[in-house]
Image (cartoon, rainbow, N blue to C red):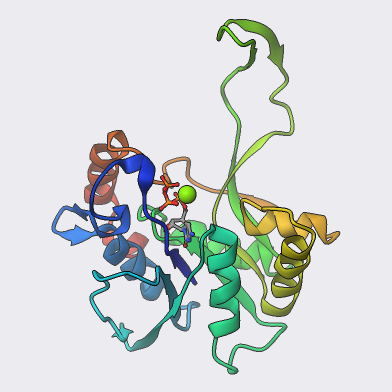
Length: 228
Ligand code: CTP
Ligand code: MG
């Protein structure tokens, strides 16, 4: 599933960021091309904003189905809507990978590793250990303490969980009024321990205009053997 129902407000562009072009293709087209080139991904459900006028109407890529659903006001509402819209051929115990449309630089070897490792566990996510020293700021933006980075990871996507367990975890968090920022947070709340699968640090989530040039450069360098 590709979450693409956001407005990209921090990008400050009129066009939602997933439709900005990088090297001749839109960001979402790069993302879909990589996912659907993967032999273990059977198809993609793209979650779009209700007022999306730019979706190019793709229904098939690499001979695999591409479906769409309408998302909600938050990322978790969009993912929940997508889970409900998945076809019945996706059973409750089947694994679903949830990926941000705004992460076009994800690489095939990372998807391989995620499917391999998280599939032997109760699910998991691509992540990267925190490498920088972490500072605690006061109200004047002055550093008052140094925090330990030990055991801290940055959570990326794809995140991979079983359809049934993830649907329940997201519904339970929503009923409790808790806004989860990723799928793993809902699963942790439900008592699961998602496996952190170390991935490439350059699987960036394109957030501001500064990220665009870096992503364009990265995309031009990712070899075809890595899935594009
Ligand atoms: N997303 C979604 N539904 C929402 C909000 C976000 O499907 N209601 C998707 C975005 O399209 C994006 C991914 O979740 O691919 C990660 O979210 P983020 O990077 O925050 O994207 P936006 O919400 O679009 O950007 P911003 O927060 O700057 O407005
Ligand atoms: Mg957002």
